[in-house]
Amino acid sequence: MSELIFFNPFFKQVLWGGSKMRDFYGYSIPGDHTGEAWVISANPHGASIVRGGTYDGQSLTSLWENHRELFGGMKGKEFPLLVKIIDANDHLSIQVHPDDRYASLHENGSQGKTECWYILDCDDDADIVIGHHAKSREELEEMIAAEQWDSLLRKLPIHKGDFFYIPAGTVHAIRKGTLLLEVQQNSDTTYRLYDYGRLQDGKPRQLHLKESMDVIACPHVSLNTRGAEEDHGDYRLCNLAEGPYFTVTRWNVKTHASISHNHPFMLIHVTSGTGTLNDCPVAAGDHILVPAGFGTLHCQGAMELITTHI
Ligand code: ZN
Image (cartoon, rainbow, N blue to C red; front, side):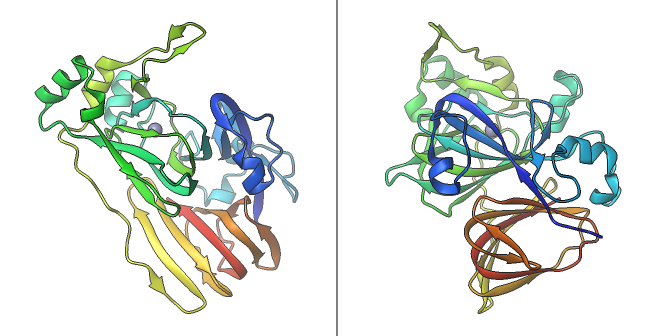
């Protein structure tokens, strides 16, 4: 009998973290500097753990290794996605990720990272870094060498409900006062371009300028993958991204909605509200794996869901 699989996150305490995940989702966070919740993770650095049901207490890693039928018999050594909630109480360093080709050549065969961000909440004056203003690779190198960060980095104001698609090669950074949901390729390959000159334990953190220069797309091309919002009366639907690594959709359910599912697996993130999924109670902060062959999902209630599949 096929069932919905709920997960408890793996939490990470970091200098720049905060306590919003407790306030927003009632999570038992380990402290007031909780920056990351790995809500769907089979990553060796921290796995999410099944809460309740047949697989209670098992990690997503163990499900992927021992129950491939839950994922439609998908091939591959690693579970393909990593989903996090990030609470930034300070600016995060400016980063860029390689694509699969560069990562496999230079990072021991690992994959690259394309990711996306959905803004769950933010301060009124919050902003984000996506891309840069250099017109050529020469200009990019000059501006980095001269540390002209203010004129180089492309900062955008953000609002709750905004969505950003960040292909490999895009300079990006989360900034102070932002709570977001991050869906990404399951990879740890990150190159740090700039860290605001900050010190950690008296020393600057390592930068990866050469690798960053190798992989930064130049000039930056801004991408809007978000489709028009469709109003279906009982619910509204918005395709946020549809790409080679993941498809992400937002559902604003007013009373009910049916979500068809014919993918190897689907992930559901309840970002606000409460209701039921096929009579199973769900609430804001729940992260659910819908296994292969589960069939159509019937949602009842008033809630916002983000669904992800590959
Ligand atoms: Zn990133």
